[in-house]
Length: 194
Ligand SMILES: [Ca+2]
Ligand SMILES: [Ca+2]
Image (cartoon, rainbow, N blue to C red; front, side):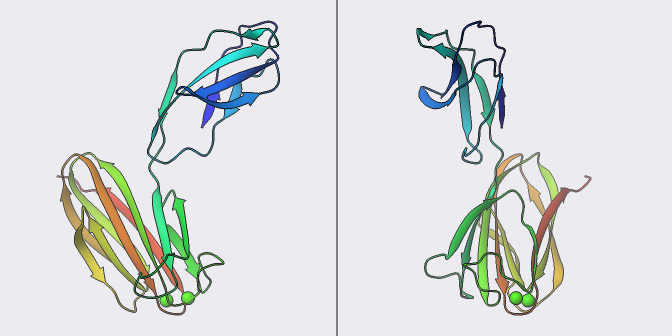
C-alpha cells in the first residue's frame, strides 16, 4: 500500500509516519511525498498520519488516511494425507490457484502425499454462486463450516457446486490432497444470474 502526502514544509529533514498512536517509520530525507507500507495483516483496518520533522521538532500531523487491507487465504501444509500434527509450512496467498506439476509447493513440503488447508473470509453480495475447483488429487470445500464438495480421492478433474449465499461475509475453506504425480488446486467462483 502506498501512502502519499503533500509536502507543505520548507525546512524538514524527514517525515515520521504513525499507525494509530504507534510510531511506524521515519523517512530520513526532505521533500519526500510517498512511502510504501508493507507487512499489514490481511483484512484489517489501519489509519496512518504523517508529520514533518527536523532538529527543532515536528510539524502538526496530517489528516488520517485509512485503509482496509484485502483478505487473503491462510494456508497450512502437512506432510501426510490426514492434515494431522503440526503443519510443516504456513503462509498467506491472494488466490487459491496453483499448478505444482510434479514438484512441491514449498521446500519444507513433500512433492507427493501432502495435504493443505486454505481459509478466507469473503464478502458476497448475496444470491447463487457457482464454486468451481480443479483438483489433482482430492479436494473438500466448505462454506461456513458446511461441506459442499467431498472428493477425497485420486483425481484430476473439475468439481463444482451452486450455493445460495446471503449478503455479507462467509468463510470459505478448502482442503487439498496430493497423492502422487502432478498436483494442482485452482478455485474460483462467480455469481449466477437470478
Ligand atoms: Ca506430486
Ligand atoms: Ca496427483
